[in-house]
Length: 178
Image (tube, rainbow, N blue to C red):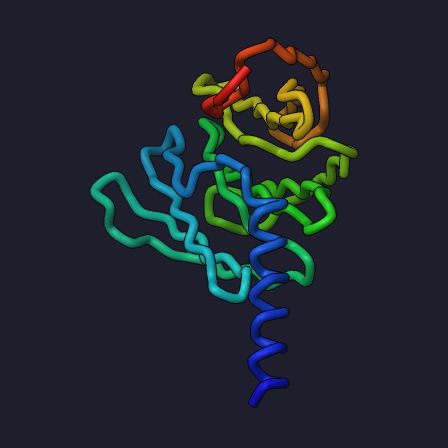
């Protein structure tokens, strides 16, 4: 019994450690394309995902399950005006994998970014124009600076820009103290 309790405590500590170190991503769990259809992200307890598609009246149109993939944690999605959905996966070592999924939730392609020592992905967003370009934002965990990756809809990197750090301010967080 004591050995079993010890194993459970070690497993819980490992889960908490992973959660604390790689969970700060602020990505969405839904998106609406220019077709008016909503895409929803359901995260499985086994780290798989179930993507749903709903029409403009929120009627179920279909779904697709992906994963689980060893070492990867689903973080969120965003949906562009091109009606593609982009899925953000975070590997436990900090590597980001972005997926492009078509309007019918079929996998199209993926691109890896990182891992970047001292940086974690903070958010994934898309512009609301027909350009459908993406922004992947990284946050420096020691000084709060941010780097923005500007990506084409096919996930290719166009450019990156870094801002900060700014004393007394943190990106998307409340700073306590000096």
